[in-house]
Figure 1 (cartoon, rainbow, N blue to C red):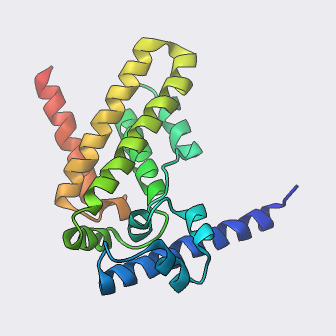
Figure 2: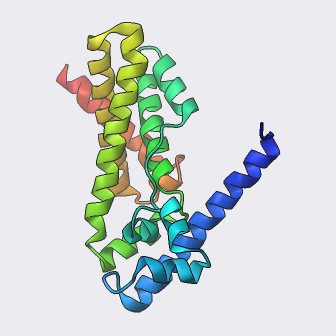
Length: 204
């Protein structure tokens, strides 16, 4: 069995390779354009084999974005599932959606970097949308499993609706502060939560 230090070293090496591949991809598309950049060129510049590239990224677009398949962090899921009724539950839902979104972007780089790349290469938008859809499907599946076992179908529907609402809160905050994913303490996030709570209250 591996000890904690060995696992920590392996994770650091994994992140270093992810980031080296992303750096190489961003440099190459800057020089040659997205269409004319190949996986082989990215791997060569990063000093790894083409086979190793596909152990880290599914395609060159993912390497440029630094994007990997989404995961659901255990602590964020636990905090959401165990949150009781009340305003804090929306906060835990937003935290969970943010944690899953951040799990996709392991290749490094600030969100402003992503915006500039998408401005230059609009074809990356479709790939980002695919990752967003995958994240939604994963969250739906995990919530069904975690909450359905405890409370039944109605509670699962309530939780899914709350997650969708949290996604809307995050998108609203992003409009005011595009760096919100890199700064969970951004005032834009708290302001967005307050706007949605006020709007829902007015509907009741």
